[in-house]
Length: 344
Image (tube, rainbow, N blue to C red):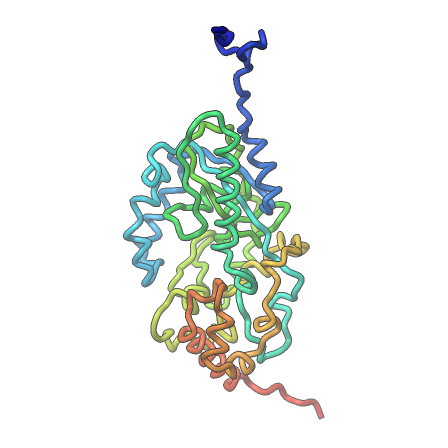
């Protein structure tokens, strides 16, 4: 009986050749390239470390700026450091996706009846879109890595101070309007991250380029930006029209104007968004029901039509009842709008 040729150490049986060990293919640059292929506009890597900006969150909570968002206080300990979420984390892969579409800003509108909706909510729900892309990136990373690793992807809803890690990943700095501002993309970006146990090469942090500009603070309709990069959410239109349940305080209702879901004013006046990049991605294009909508057109939708419009949209967070509450406030503000004098 003839025996099979015995392979040498690490060799291929009968070939006389030594099998090469796999080359480590998962590098920081490869991850960034793959992220772009999957639809992300920027990708950077931050260290999972004790970053100085992380400590401000607890001070912000202590000032009462979170309002009724009790979940933020409940998760404060985990949000203090991603290693409280994934103990083995060594790096945070941060992605940024441009959602800006080719439509006028709310500050450019001359129609007093226009219903203003935050730009990110015009298309599909970004949570679902970006999480699918992060899952695809993570699956590719596992395929390419020659070693096992732990990782967790998050899009907005996880206990992660994503803006801090975006700054330390070189994506952009935290502006005076509290948004991450990229020199190339402006602030019209959605963030996602993967907490990872791999010791990947990290990027240099972005540096603040707001300078002496205070346009965002000056333009805030409800004066919610109480200091540079400090937001009192209880006065913010986004909080009042999305997060707050129940009645919007009467004293602040006139300042909301016709913003029926969120507010973009502090981004619209930012000089870094004067010539902002525009996305052609179909998922961010405005759905017909929201595109140039008026308060009257949205208020005229019956419950079935409104629920259908909210399906698969980030606006489903406010629910139909919350949107109707906001539309009523906007309708009242329109009714109280002074009529311009006509020249003789």
